[in-house]
Image (cartoon, rainbow, N blue to C red; front, side):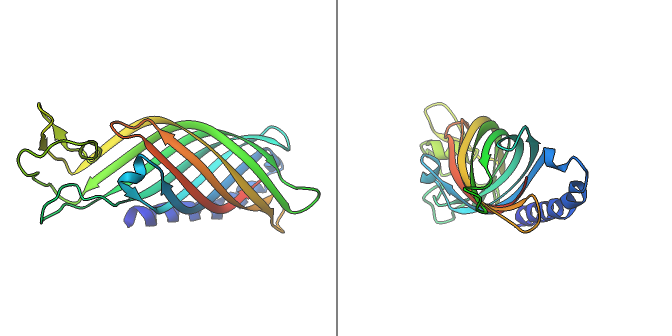
Length: 221
């Protein structure tokens, strides 16, 4: 919960500070976005984790009225839906995914003179998956190792048998993202409300990370 609150406070700070920067005479050169929503895991990630919240923010440069690049930071909370072991005293834990990506965005901000627009976006970057177990857990003897145990940071010895567990496990990987968004112009010049769906795939260890955050928020330029 504390990580979620910290992420929301950071994003709120971005919203409050950016208008001050936007007063610069060259503000049309730059773009900014902030939002949040839900994350929907897809298989193989969806076999072990369920829907949870997300938050994102980004800043970039506009080449012209239709072409832009931006750097995006995203946080996704993922809810475990799978018991690690079938035992009376089961461990519990949490999964947080952080990403930093560079993306190209093609956008049409007004369709036939209306306030409605759309954009397509895609790119790639770095994905970091952090898994926490609420306490050290001793796995029953001779438990057979499966991919989900590696996900949570369990070590497997010879013969494919689980040996030990750790309380926290991080995994970094490269990944790609692509999606589409829809915008509505707001009364304040340059500002738009947006709804976006973006597919993300990272080549994480043992089990790839695949998910689709559905984000609502605000864009500038």
